[in-house]
Length: 89
Image 1 (tube, rainbow, N blue to C red):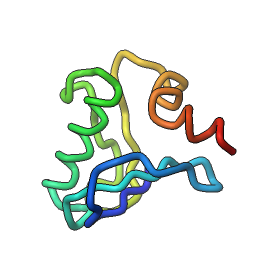
Image 2 (cartoon, one colour):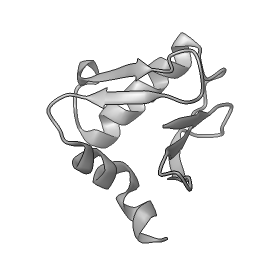
Image 3 (cartoon, rainbow, N blue to C red):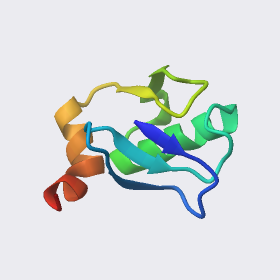
Image 4 (cartoon, rainbow, N blue to C red):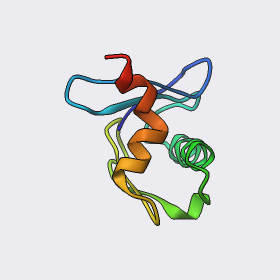
């Protein structure tokens, strides 16, 4: 997942050529605890899971992040977050 900060609103904006999901965050900078908290809260809302089920496994201090979500499959996460975006390609 690639996070772009200082956005007007928090949203999923697309899928990059390498398959990485791109998300805009209002918080800044990308590695700040506030931005990580915003990302986790946003994902929890979009995936309809508790925020404690989401973990930033790698990339806590940067824009590129690896996310783990307990109790749901990777395919489910991709369909919930990027399904419409992937269908448009």
